[in-house]
Length: 409
Image (cartoon, rainbow, N blue to C red; front, side):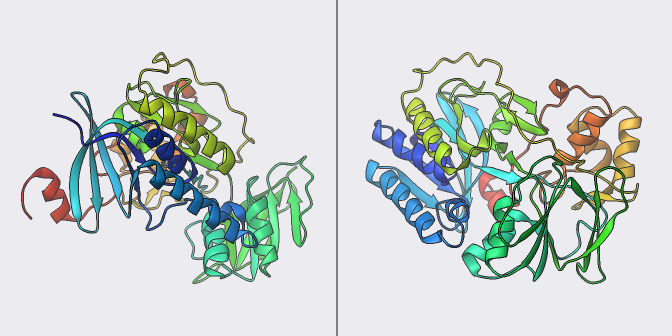
């Protein structure tokens, strides 16, 4: 039976839009699905508040190119699973109308990246948020997350600059001790780390300590933005069985010169491979989209992925034994350390023994933290495969699960 599509692209950010345009222009019947209500990904955020119209225009241009080339775009659609089948793959899709399976010869994962979390006392307190969430409030909604804001992390320059330009009093805690970078309106402290977030009903102060063992200080704040960096969000490639490397605190998919993973027919492009920014993601998407359209033109042998350079990460977990490291299942640092002491040496084993990763986020928040525990226990990076992922990748209503199973609710 002929597949429904030649190429199915997951993610309509810069890489996905460029890949869909390139694949369709090369003659492939191309479907592009996007989880959010509108395409474009983080183009507007990357452009910043002052240049948001330019980012929106750039996204519209990429959408126009994809549609003009003949690609079909479906927003508000989640790719829940991918399964190998004869002659290609079955991809399970869900949207507000229901769930259904479509077939495709090739699957191209361009699902972008998400931010690295870190756990410390008070990290689940209202007022503590990720940097991109804060940028979205400023750029898209013209709202400040707080009036006195602390930004924590080596990747916090853009967020700190946007918040300061919007009128917030911003302190940037940069864990890198030797980087000197001044930002207008931003008080930068090099070599500092967050110790705890304090407050009653919401954040009131951030406890931070400088390098060298000097005493910690209390910084009044009503918002704390975490900006430690990005991790590829390539769960579909995990689920398909692609091999990953562990690099700089991140699981990174192996791929060949054409963007193909160790699973023939499964490709990865853009930030889903390694955080690279909009301009490089567009170029990468174009290259990988063309390769997916003419499947077989690129070598199937996947060499060892090159070691990427990234800023050294501060400790991702710091705090007492009762510190929650899996917020969905309320698994503590003590629970994880006890499981490791009892012999757990993989993410899947930790998941089975502690329930960490079994909640609504399905490990998106806690797997980097669990991997940090295992690395600290001496588990070699090569022995840290991604955990097994089951259907669905996102929570589904029971009637939609019944649809996928061919039954009725």
